[in-house]
Length: 288
Image 1: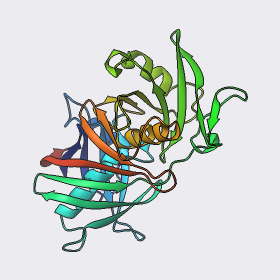
Image 2 (image 1 turned 90 degrees about the horizontal axis):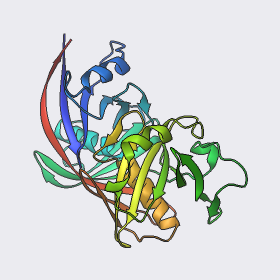
Image 3 (image 1 turned 180 degrees about the vertical axis):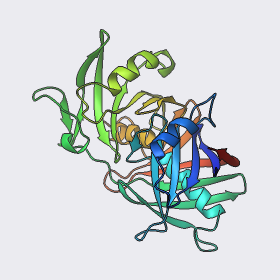
Image 4 (image 1 turned 135 degrees about the vertical axis):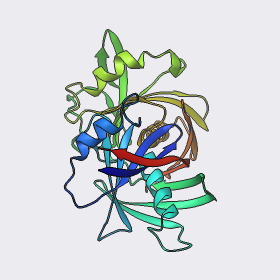
């Protein structure tokens, strides 16, 4: 049996997209197989386009390790481009609503056609409460900003002291701001330890960030269930939110990742808006 797929990417964060059937498929197993770099197609995750009764389309995101992600900014943008390209929305429609585990998310088709297109996605309001992230903080550690965000939370990993800020974008994020270039941080060593630390009951996405100016920040991401990725949309949003809460940066903010640059805007109250360019890489059939 052959499964039709399309591979898309935004800032190097790549996905294999398939349209869901009614065969009760084991998506976790398929993702582990299809996302392998040398024996599969190779991707950070599997996007599943679903029908929805409450939005234009539905989406599930399965990480490369087979776990499911609650939110995925670049995945949302990739799905929106595919939906527009393949007639899942009305002709001339520039707004697409997507049902996700984290709630309804809206994407706006900005410009471009064919292979590449710029997309803006509303990523929802950030969450700061420990039980909503979730993070098992100890009383008396760290501090709070604006009676909301937990920041400067100490965590010692491999004899390295990290001071973390916590944000949920529908999925959990722990952000470490440092003054050195992010390329100097041993992410491949520290990332998996932070991801699986007992502080995070549902694991965590870990971002290392350096503020270059009030207009741009460089970031590397260790993504839960994937490892280091070239970019992460929800991670870029989490960093931008934390930077604004800590008065490190303005809005909109350029988030510079190894795979490219994403733009994040947040007014400090409402939804976080993620912008990036999506590219359709190729389509084909996966043989089972």
